Each structure stands twice: as structure tokens, then as C-alpha cells.
Length: 346
Ligand SMILES: NC(=O)c1ccc[n+]([C@@H]2O[C@H](COP(=O)([O-])OP(=O)(O)OC[C@H]3O[C@@H](n4cnc5c(N)ncnc54)[C@H](O)[C@@H]3O)[C@@H](O)[C@H]2O)c1
Image (cartoon, rainbow, N blue to C red; front, side):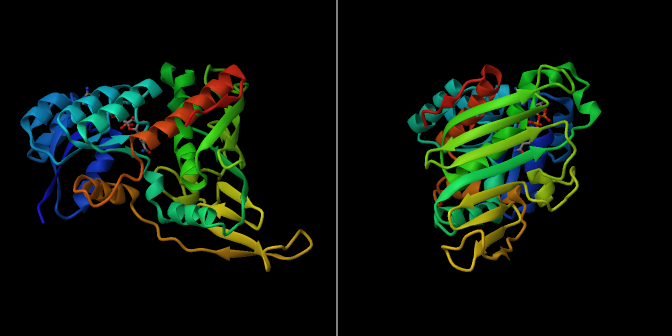
């Protein structure tokens, strides 16, 4: 089979994580980098590649099978439109774009150009996420009634040194929540409405110190999600799973799904049930640990990109799906600042 040739736009922190994944795959090659930063030019040179400063100069001069976009979020729209102009299959880092209007433009242009866009919500690739989705969707805990989740940790003081990190745009809702929302949508289905309460009474910056989000899903289940970047705790997805070497693993689960016949802890899957499906609070409830292999989700995502570009698979998170996760996240931000319940159009 032919080598699959990838061009990378934006070779910063997450761009280099994609390079690591590409390097681990046989018959997949990084053939070009576009990034104006001197460090990126050095990186290209060290790999014997021509260094381009922007997407168009790379795409006009290099033959690539697919493009990965890992530029700052405000650039996603322009870089996506450029890659689609050249009719490329694209994997864009999350969020798909900065605004829903931009995301709509991308969705329509991709359809017009006959191209596939994948959005980099890498959590969906972990087997535990797929198994949780199957358990919920196949009714193993009965009708889904409620979900509770947490992403509560304390970011280091240096993190808040740059003034922009104190703005609402850099707070945990707009920085961290989209991964949680996307996972919840993947496992439980679309979100119908969102409301929220926030507080900043620790740091007194514009951004939230903690926020409580209420969700109603299209299937009528309710959800609550707590998010804070000021509270040391073992309850985040990253710590539960040990996803990143940057954060210590605790193994403590950060989400619970509740159905009328049982409950599921996540991401280390523990299924709690009575011995029969009509069991109640007087009867013993027993845990079943479900093993799920731990994988490199970035490698799985790259393999999926190749399969989509070659027409063997359809995107796990396409532009429309990525737009809905963005929509729900932006709605949570508006709900937190405006104190209103927001209905999503989906
Ligand atoms: N999936 C995840 O878990 C995850 C994690 C971190 C970041 N991200 C997303 O990845 C994106 C990048 O974040 P990052 O932390 O890697 O940022 P970063 O600042 O480390 O890297 C961005 C890179 O883009 C380059 N760049 C800027 N303008 C450019 C242009 N016009 N053309 C080409 N390159 C350009 C910069 O020089 C830099 O090297 C963001 O959208 C962020 O939300 C996703």
C-alpha cells in the first residue's frame, strides 16, 4: 500500500503530539510543516523537510493526502477554508472553530468541495468511551435518567501569570469543558438545553473559579457537571485515566451515568447492578469491573484520518458533530455569564 502523506499546519504543543503519532505508524509520513515560528522551521529542517510559513504556501507546493490543523483556535476557520479549497481531507484540532458561524461555513464548504473534516476530540477513540456508549445506548443500565461529572483541579500559579489567562475566554468553560461536553454527547446523545451558575470569589479574575452546569439531553435525561481550576482534587478525566504524563494518575472516576436498572462509573468502567433488573434500595448492589485497553488515542485518530481519506471509514466526529459540541460549550458560557437557560437548536 502507498505511503500516506500528511501536511501539518501549526507545529506547537499539540502539533508536535500529532507528529509523535504519525511517527509511530507504518506507511504514514509527515511530508511538510507550515508554521511561521522559528522553532517550527528548525523542526522541519531537522527532519529534512521544507519549512513553510503558512498553509497556502505549503498546499500550493506540496502533494499531501491529508492535512492536520493545530494552529491557535482563532486561525482554524482560515486554515480549514484553505485546506478545503485544495480539496484535502482535514483533521482540525478542537474546537472546530472559534464561533458557530465559522463552523457552519466550514460544514457547508466541506460539503460543497466533497471533502471530509474530522475534529480532534481524541477522547472518543479510547475503548472505554466506546464501551460506555455501547452500555448506555444498548440499555444495559435501563433508560438513562441522569449523569453527573466533574473536572475539578488546581492549575499552577504560573499558569495565571499571563494577563489573558485571567479573562473569561481563558477560563475552564471555554478551555476545558468542550472535551467533557463532547464525551457526554458521544455517550448519551445530543444536549437540548444548558444552564449554569459560576463564581470567581477566590481569584477575583474575570474568568470563573468554579462553575456548576445543568444539562438536559434530547433523550430527557438530566446532567450536572462541576468544573473548577482552583480546587485540588483527584476527579478529572486526565487523572482518572492517566491520559497525559503532565498530570498524575489517580484512577478516581470523574463521571457517573445513572439508569433505571443500574449505574456506570467512568472512565474506569464499573457497572453497578442489583441481581435482577427490578432490584431496589433494599437489595445488595454489586459492582462489575469492565476492563478496557488503554491506547494512544492520537495514533488511533491518525489511523482513522487515513481510513477516512481513503474512503474506508466515515468520520467519528465530522464538522457538524464538532459544531454541536462547540455550540453546547458556547451555550454553557453564555448561560454562566447571562444566568439564563439556553435551548440548543441541534
Ligand atoms: N485535543 C486536545 O486535547 C488539545 C490540547 C491542547 C490544545 N488543543 C488545541 O490545539 C490548538 C493549538 O493549541 P497548542 O496548545 O498546540 O498551541 P501552540 O501555541 O503551542 O501552537 C500553535 C502553533 O501554531 C502556529 N501558528 C500560528 N499562526 C500560524 C499560521 N498562520 N500558520 C501556521 N501556523 C501558525 C504557532 O507558531 C504555534 O507553533 C488549539 O486550537 C487548542 O484548542 C487541543
